Length: 150
Picture 1: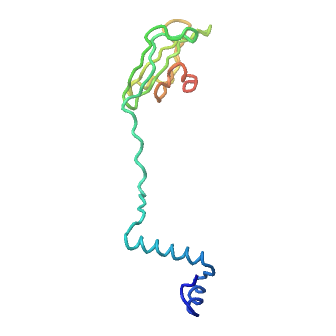
Picture 2 (picture 1 turned 135 degrees about the vertical axis):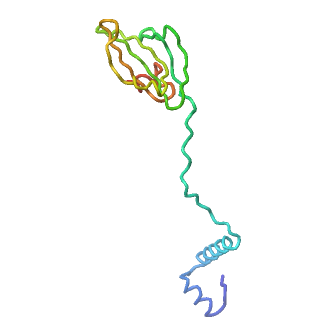
């Protein structure tokens, strides 16, 4: 297939470096697409703004149990509590030297978080209290406690 007859066709294709019909067709198609985008203004607009940060939930959901042992599970007050954003879930471990472990799980508001991650002696002789806070939904439930509260 020749676009022009005579020496003009050889010169125009040689200047573009096109030596075959498929190269010529590809070049024509490319030129048509470029011209179409210039005439009709269909340019891809790139948004260089970073995406907005994900919205945090309004409340943190925590596991609540007022009396729990590893062997028997929650014996008193199993429930869910809600704390405002920025708060934490907490688990208190009450232990003695014979490795008795009683747990209390609850929510902590921002103002109460000064008692996160501490160890102190209990008012009852021979026992001590260890507390641990975490900051994800249900991070203090029995299944997640091993991951978030080592």
